[in-house]
Length: 409
Image 1 (tube, rainbow, N blue to C red):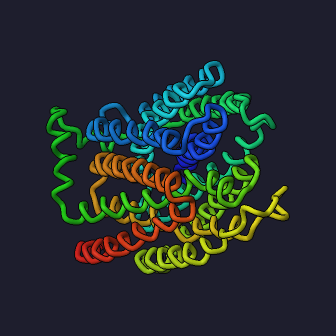
Image 2: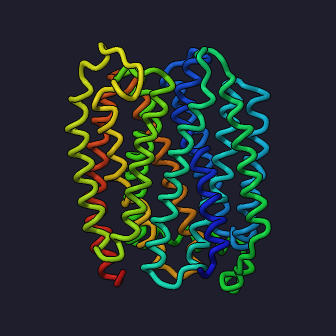
């Protein structure tokens, strides 16, 4: 298979960062246990992850071609390897903030580079769309694995910080990913030809993308999607524990159903989108997601009175609600691929930067809003809130589809 080694490297990089990025829901739960902090205070960890992603992406996306996609990914892997080694040595709340800040900066370098690299190794729009979904499905496999990896390190004593030793294992994975990428060849000459001699001009070119009506509608769609996804993903372990009354370890393990359903959804979408128009797929998926929220939240009522000891006697809502991941799965990779495929390859890096920026902002705002609704109005109302951005993204994607049709995408 052509480009198999670089594709494998991209998949492993995404896998490692999937574990780290989406551990925030588990860490939010654990720091509440360890340090006695509230849901609202714990929710700032999402900001320490996502705001550095947004800021770093905004600052480096326009000139990351000068750094080189491969070199940028190597820097990201090196930074996060070091941070993971320090976390078990200093297991305190402020260090978890530093860890997620480092993860955010590193992932910005990784994601912008990965998205831009896909354009270099894809020979058609359909191939781009298919690999993007496969890549995102592998990301969700990483998320799924992360739940079980972290739960294996959670001690019986809720006040113990022994769970932080999981970062030794993750650091080893990062180092392995670094070595694979280091020994993999990536030809970036086609985009280097488009590089100007003026850094300011490169930055202005990225900002000018905002002036395109298609980009504006796309950015709104990306922001709303990640707001939905991250608010559910980050707070599902806490929902399982506080609303469904599951034990802490089981709360984390059962949240893996969400990641598993997303992985399956994106893997399947990689094949379906070769035959069915992307807009039909994503609009149907979002409607089904809204229906699932309306069905499952009433099922969560009255479950707190039941004593749950394991998977066999967990409430039905704990199994059904995470299947929303199957519905949401195709949306993000599909619209990203459609947007990137309309642009020349040398604009993929700055456009990827904008994708990462607004994904990060959507994730931060979604998690903080959900955390505060969770604290003051309860977990069920926090997830009912997702119906609002689901409705808004259906509207924005309607206009996005019309504009892409006018450009032949």
